[in-house]
Image 1 (spheres, rainbow, N blue to C red):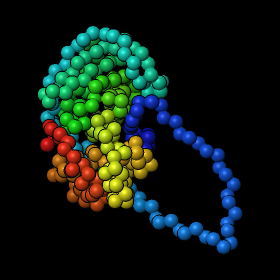
Image 2: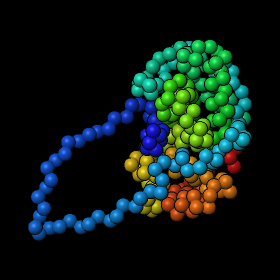
Image 3: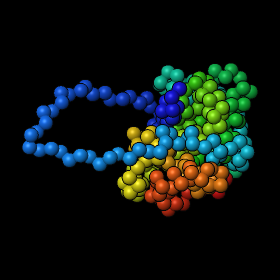
Image 4: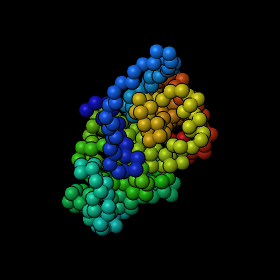
Length: 269
């Protein structure tokens, strides 16, 4: 699986389609008017940010997860990447609560067959999500858990999980970093992705932290940037000096933008 294909997002949890356009004949050059040569495009330092350091959040970090209570089985509409569509299933339901007062419903696909097996999955991911800052969990209302090796997703007040994909993330040590990315979609995009201040920071920085952010500036720039903002501001002793320098030199205005907002970073802070 190449690096680009492993970058995971589902901003609005709807299938995304590329819009192909047919090629047009090349225009005949004008003998009297030559357009100016465009400025060189800066190359982002990374292809995707979740792969840069597996220790921004680790397995030993504190979790705010408090409890998980089974509430039965009921029909729920969930997005499933295996069929690239919405499905209605009689999901196993669990109410997850956290020490900061936040809560969400975990909806587990009935393919897990039993309450016990479903609870094992719900408990696992609730504990990991509990390691994320409050600011990233504040708009999470549901978590969908399916089998299958498909990309995770964020948005629609939700985090989407496919458990066989988790194997790869855990192997690379980036399960927590992946969830930071997806939760950034869920809790930060709506307020910040098209904010005047954020757009001004993009212009002032004159570059993107990753090619994924550059190619999807409205959809991916917040999520791609926030993880490494966390690394610089709250885990600077855990990352390499070269990575810290690269982040600070590439997106100083984005860092300043996040600094200006009162984001609750507990339990990271």
